[in-house]
Length: 337
Image: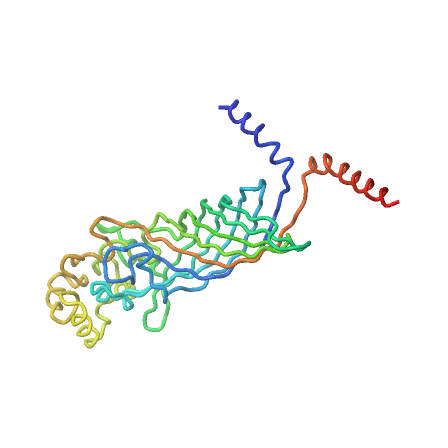
């Protein structure tokens, strides 16, 4: 193994020593969205990006530092803030509308990703103001802070601290508390345009795979008041179907026959007042679990960026080539006389 690593280093060394290296640093702004349990379209199952609500796209901003050791590869360190949110009231699925949950969360992400250039177009333009254009894909790892909140009677509450599914209870059948700090895998593609070799303007689309089903605080079953505890706000935010007006219930049942509406109130009450039931979709105890098991939440960033390029040569490059360059310049100057 050591010999293979040594051989790899020897093969890579010439390209590193002879190549120009680049550092660039900058900022990015754009939009953020998420794919989870809340909101979505007519199906209960989250059906990829098509299940996103574009109207719920919110702001994202961040800074980054990028190092390009060789022509085709760069490494990017970024710190990003983005808000994601969702509301069942915007869904076209009757069971989700009846569930009536909503949330927002401010995500803070730190990530390290490797970028691989698929294609680079050199010397775009004319004269001395030549520019480059690159298309790349990226993947890496990171961590993010997630603090889902919900608004109740004009006040925003931190849902993780309330334990809306009984996470802070020692009662049997309740899940363990989820952490506000989670791991993510950023992956996606991007492009950038370099102007005068110093200014880079880019666009990047990034998907974040996560290992948690609680970005939106929804992932399991409804908990009883006894499981949640004595916190009245937690009980209220755990099950919000009672906040829907009678007119909204009637409208929902007319639009989505057989789902949550006035004719189902008795059935819901008999089920323990745990929540909506749409035949073939959710059983009365289900708050966020899908028929095929838990599914992790993911989020999405699309950003425009600007960065400033710091250019230079390695010490080997300068020692090897500066002399020959200056020598050629001297020859040219002598030729004039």
